[in-house]
Image (cartoon, rainbow, N blue to C red):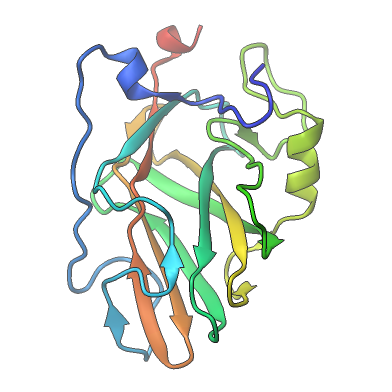
Amino acid sequence: MPSRNESAGWPVSSLVSGLALVGLFLAVGGSFGCGTDRDVVTSSGPLDFGMSDGSTALYGMCYAGPGTSNSLGGLTGRNDSTDDVVVFDSVAAGTGQEVEVREAYVVLFGVVADQAEVFGSGFVLPPDRDYPDGAAQVDEHQMELWEQRIPLEGAELGPGESFNLIVGVAPTVGDRGSSDGLEIRYHVGSQQYSSYPGIGADFLSPDECK
């Protein structure tokens, strides 16, 4: 079982030697997400995810079956504004992919000087069940974070506050599928923003998960 601050999902670069997973997740007009009357600006606005190089971290993970999802939970960020409150609206996987977002939460850290510990990626959600051998399950520290979670939609982030996103993803068909990023929509007052942090999931075959 992974230790604290580790992920059950393996970066694909460690699974496939020499595979370079670099690509910019482009923002396009009419992109996926919930409808809104606000004007959408395809930039990160005041949210800082610390991912400015355009690369994508793709995590290999094993699907535990119907009624479950796997965490993309290594994503952290901060509201860089000194005055404005950020309100989260939605999160979705990339268009045309074989992975969907089934649940999404925010763990609020407040204003912190150092990087707070995160939930991690690849763990099976919900974490309070017994799963077959080989399923990635959480430890006590992760359960504490899970219990502090709030639904992403409508969550507010004050000026200077930091957070950890826990996004539950699953294949749309069968037990395989991959995505090349997330779209996170949020607003500040009447202004809507879309941000595209480079983190995705690659659900492995049952043989690879043995």
